[in-house]
Length: 184
Image (cartoon, rainbow, N blue to C red; front, side, top):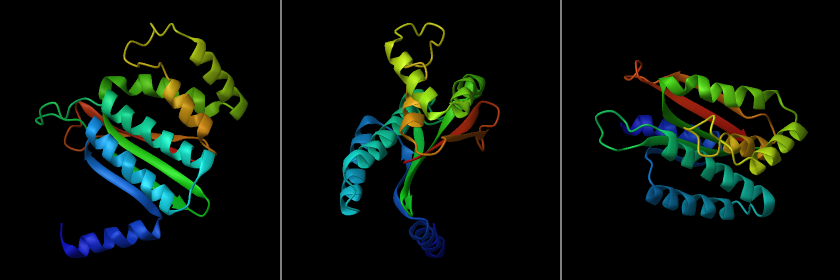
């Protein structure tokens, strides 16, 4: 990367309130290191209490999804990749994650997220409680929590969660890139 390009990236990051950004290999060790770094950044911003916990748990939920549900990157062994960003603008935190998904899972993900986007805050809380009590997830053998993570993100977000699924450049036939955003 050229110094000029990096300089522009750094200035844009500062202008857009980037608190934390990572893109690369995702593993338990990397998540632990990122978690420690984010905790320090939140402490430096004097962020305490419930909101800090929500930002942190949102971060963990998103990056663990990337690790657990992303396919290994073709031609890279058993490596899983993801990107995550935490930014603060005015009085809100934004947590955005991106990771690869297999094309075949696009519809399943949309079928989980689209109904949540239509729910009120109370409906999200009710669905979350119902899902906590539901130990029958046989209809979805791919997802460990059958959508509980998405409900958790929606419950903690002060604005509707957002998502997008785009073709993964270079892997268009087999992979897509899944983006997810929560506002705390």
